[in-house]
Length: 555
Image (cartoon, rainbow, N blue to C red; front, side, top):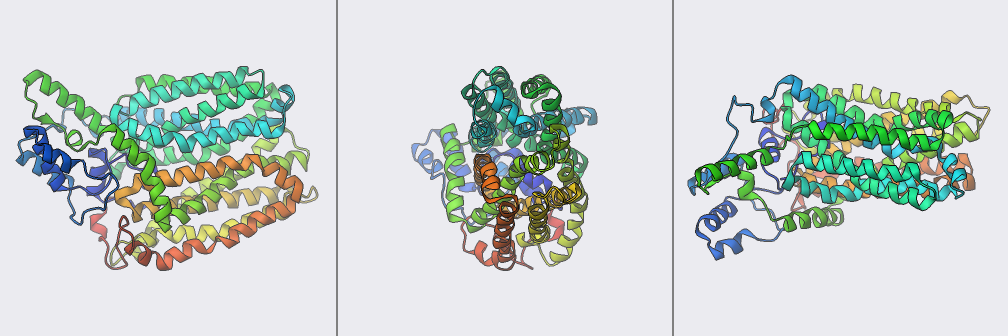
């Protein structure tokens, strides 16, 4: 099963049971485990049984078997068949979770730097878009493509990098991707025409997507669930605050030094991030154990030394097929994935819309400079921080709702609140942003409310998707990420024209009305989600009073 999704780690209380957590950490494939498949693979390995080989390579996107098999059951089956499974030896420091606190914190902070370099890269250039338009003698729409192309990379890149990380490990993927991000940022800083600028941003965006899809797994590799609170708070801060920090920094850099210096400073920061990738150790358990098993086979000449991940690993082509096809299938066939992804995509698109709408409200309407316009994004950051502080109280609500057993819909309470706050924020923004006589604080209040709503919706909806499809969480999240990135990428292509054509007030009103139209989506799933899941072959079938008890969930 692929790396534990970032969104699963942000949930409070934890989504995954201890058994599911161990499954994500031990194996590099997703879907229910099968003893019959283990038997056929062991037979193929030791006896070169052609019939067993055919049995082992059954359909990639098949119907999940009814049997519930744990990692321990699977390991016992392989040992029974004569496989000498290689595992971590307690007390030796092989296991990343046994590393010293200092080493764990170094890895946590280093990988968080990777994430913030990517998050900043997506939005810092919005600090001075007009400078590039004038300098390169092009149009605003062409320069806006620098944001569009970068964000598109966020959706495309993980489809490739996720399966590759299962083959080569996290460290090589970090090193190669950040190096490419570093290299492809240089053409943007040196560009003499718009084509060079846009193409460089597209390539940089694809390369930069790797940390966003792997860093969550790194945090899970080294920290046990009960110790993950503060590390995840730091990591989630870079994840959510990074995009809003971009315009703050970019605005002042653009005002004082010009638009090219935005790219030069980004180039330098990404270079520092690349240096971190060279010294960060490998944390992915299947890769560490695979190297150990290879060493044992070489030293002893005994080919029966293998890891559980090696025995269960699919060929790279099959892994790529899963990574590319299964998310699309889930998007089409699973209503929860489709409509929750659509809602999250709308919220994500609004975030990138504000990168262009705030400058209209503050620079164009109120005459603020680039630096002060960028500083206005602090209002969204304050809303995000407030929401992250309040979010842990969801645990109390969740415990009460699941006193008789866990079920996914109990994750939706914050979203039910957030989807009510979102229209309020957009209505305030619509009726205050376009009027110079309205105090600027009103627009900032709208930004803060949007930040609160975004976090409540984002964390809750993602938790619901993962809880509903815990055995296929990586594919469900890949489907969501693809739709979200494509929707977010489209916004720069029309936002300025929309606000100028319709007028600030009516453009904002349109967004607010759309948020009202889609408001019932979480309520529909809250009331009828159980019935919908019961009709799915891939979803968790737990209903109120029938799911796991609190004791089964890891804290």
